[in-house]
Image (cartoon, rainbow, N blue to C red):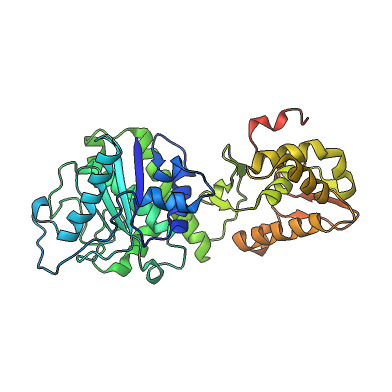
Amino acid sequence: MNIHLIKTTEYPLGNYKQVLELLRSFTGPMKFLSPIDRVPTDDEDAQNAALNWDGNNELVLECFEHRLSTVNELPEDWRAFFKRCSNYRRNNAVGTSDFVMLLTEQRNLANWFSMFDGKNNAFIDCADWEYFTKSPSTYPIAYEVVANVLRTIMCPKLTLPNPYFHKQTIGCINDLCMNKSEISIKLRTADVCPVCVERLNEQGIDDRVLDQCIGIIEGIRSQLLFREGSRRPRQLSEIKLTDNNKFYFTGYGNLELKLFPLQKVLYAFYLNHLEGVRLNELSDHKAELLYWYRKFSNADTNAQINTRIADLINPIGSSFSEKKSSLNNKIKALLGENLAQQYKIGGESGEVFKINVDRHLVVLPEDRSLTYA
């Protein structure tokens, strides 16, 4: 199942990419696709051009009194959003079974967080989430993407009002939240009520798709609560380095530890050497460090890679301490002081540097066992 994410001009590219990365951090049959996949990852101009594919991102709206009785009488701005999705389908040969989701900060007159059209298209309002959650808007927006997949499967022929939309907030993905502040209840419960689950099963939803959707909304809930300080976990999380070179705390809702390439090199190395390694012993592991850096850096030449690793392992230089300090600060900022102690690179000058996490909580790509040559 493919879900294509597109956006309007005013929605920042950086925010869009964060939503995309968050959704992609959860594995399963749903694949989240983007026009920027076809252009260089470091070329923001090309990425913006790919996303602004039709050259007309502004929706011209007129005030009118809208009704919500049939699809043909959907608000005019909703129809404009859905038309953009349909145009993207036509221009990019997107199949009818694929989903197209439009992320936008442009207002919709009904003031809904999101809506779908029953034809595998949907829009998500990306503005003003700071009024409803302390956490980055990435999380509720990603939640709405997944929720609209489930809603579309539940109601392939959309009618409004919809019998599966809950006027009273019960913590289900289909709560209407007419009082918009109640959205926080839905985000914190991350639930699909029994009636809606039964409807999904009646519609023949693939169990793997449902499992992935539930995994995503539960992961988002976990991250929201974690970031808002509402819940600090008692159990330690697995730290996983994925095949696409990202570090995730999988037990905390796939919370991502975002690092620069040399920070990744240092962290991957010490996760692979939980016994610890002194700074003056790093030169004995130069081949492995070069391996990690080539894995994490796509931009540097071989000469630059060799120079930076030479600086990193120089016991009288400053590169190691700078990278270790900045890495540890990022872990502390992400997890908090107490929890970070288990995942930081600890040790004093002249002593063994190591990470105090148990080995069973570390997951590295299988190719870590290759000969570093």
